[in-house]
Amino acid sequence: MTVDRARAEEDELVVVAPVRAARVRLPGGRRAGAHLPMGLGLVRAVERADEIGASALQIFSDNPTSWRRRAETPREVEAFRRRLIELDVGPVAIHAPYLINLAGPDEELFGKSVELTRHELAHAREYGASFVNVHVGSHRGAGLEAGIRRLVDGLERVTDGLPDDGADPNSPLLVLENSSGGGFAIGATIEELAMVLDAAEARGLGGRLAICLDAAHLWGAGYDVASPDVVDDVLALFDRLIGLRRLAMVHLNDSESARGSRHDRHAHLGEGQIGRDGLARLLCHPGLDHVAFYLETPRMEDGYDAINVARLGDLAAGRPLTEGLP
Image (cartoon, rainbow, N blue to C red; front, side, top):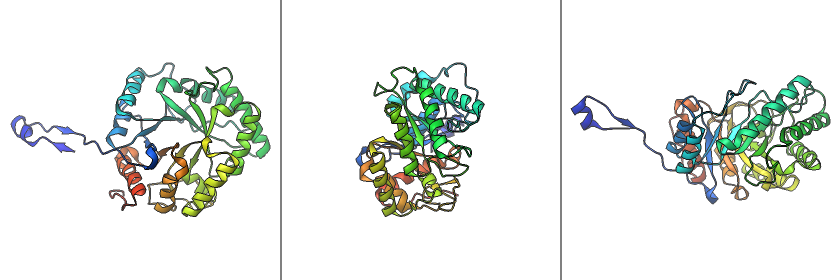
């Protein structure tokens, strides 16, 4: 922070202004940012992204732990879109609520999940969002094949009749996120993600879908992504079974959980079990220039957003990691 000392002495007023961090430089011009809290509003979120050197932004459009949505889009959404353009922040990803499970057998939960996902996708364009990120879901004991059929049924209902229905390349993508594998979750392996997309393609849904890989989820599912060689192997497998062009997002999270534990506890970059080598390889892999990277690291609201975004640049440049974390 900077303080105008002279004016403070004259007027007994301390003027505090934020210092804008240099934009983080990443290979291939790729974009990276963070999931930022909305407590101070939409416009403040994009301005905070710019202040900490981020070039992309992930948000919740509403309460992530509630089925209810606002009756109307927030009044500041137009100013939010304008600031995104002015500050060159994007792409924007909207993370869908955690309650959604499109793969489960419970009829009431399935119906509510369809409606909530459809709402998020239908309104994403109002926020200038390129992606709506949703967890693949859990079959809840019904079995993998039944869960995938249910999931694709849900995706068909989510996208049915929406404007453009995927024909417009600027339509927001529905981005399915891999899981760490706990609680009958689908999508813990690259093979399962490929099965989901293949089933969706058979229904003509492929044009609206993409994949998000979360590093902490890969780790929890058993992939040793602390090793750069394993990162290369995972992405080679993804390319062979799905195609790297279908990878739209990466959640670059370190993990507090043990590898293969099927648990999901995020850690600050370089402070968890994955560590800097694997994360740096994922961030800088030559096949991922088209991918947007987002942090979901702890305690963003306490100022650790700036430190973790700075660490993105450190990982890319091979520098010592920026200090200041607890």
